[in-house]
Structure formats: structure tokens, C-alpha cells
Amino acid sequence: MRGVCSMGSKQQSGPRRSACGIGSIFVTGALASLAMIFTGAANADMADWEHDWVALTVAQNGTWGAATNANLTRAMMQAIRDCARKSGPTGNDCGAEITTVRASWSIAYACGDYTFISNGATSADARIAAIERAIDLKEIVGIAMPPCALVVAVDPDGRILPTAPQKEILSIPASGR
Image 1 (cartoon, rainbow, N blue to C red):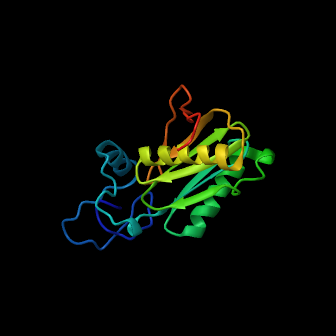
Image 2: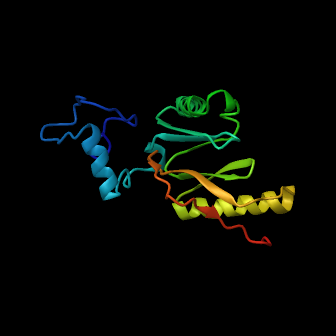
């Protein structure tokens, strides 16, 4: 498991044996996940290329799917499958809007009937990118942009962050840059 004993880039759940050496401490399953969440230091010492791929897709109706996998194609397919499972017959456009990143945040917003995903090294960077995207859509493409509500936020390790009881609304300046 990452941070405990290097066993490759693919995360595993449940017990696992490894040849990490005598005296290594193996923490598996929920305990390791809990430890990483509380310390906030999950994979902080890893290079970007050592992280798993995080795929996020959002359908036009606001249904989303996310997945983490060492294999890029598998991460994308799992995210699309997750979205389609959640949306049922109304989410036939799962995968039309999809991003894949390593060691970055992915945040999806819905602005009326329009959805988009922004990415950034930090949560703040992803939100700034979202504001810039909304401005571009409004000024360059000419799309009338209603307020944008947060759909989902995914951290660099693929964890879905709980949304606040109040919807986060993206503030789009009246005039761009």
C-alpha cells in the first residue's frame, strides 16, 4: 500500500502479501485509508507519474462518475460505467465530458444545461481554472451562463469530497480579463 510499503502503483483492498523486507509494517484496508485522510499526507512524497490515473466524467444532466486506476483506459471506462450506473437511461452522454489526471484535483460544475470539469494542482487552482472556463464560454463562445453549481470534487488520490449542505456557486465576473 502506498506510504507504507512500495508495492506498485495499483491500489488494492484487503490483505496482501509483499516482499518489502523484514520489519515492514503492513496496514491494509480501511485503516490505511483512514490514516491517509486524517494525516492529509497521502502520496505527498511521490512523483506525479507514480500516482494512479483519476478519471472524472459528468453527463449533461449532472450525473457524474469517477474512478482511480493505474491503467488510464481502465480508469476512464470505470468512470463512464459509474456515471451510467447512477444516471440510468437518462445519462447516455456519460463520457462525453471526461478528464484524466495524475496528482491533480478535478472539479465538475453545472451551469444550467451546461457542465464542465476543471483541473488544477490544488483545489484553488482547479476553481480558478473553472472561473476562467466559465468566462471563456460566456465571452468567447457566447453561451449565456447561469450560476454554476458544484457537482463533485475529486482530490489527487481519487477521493470524492463531500459537498456542503449548501451548494457551492461559482462566482463568474460580469466582465472577463
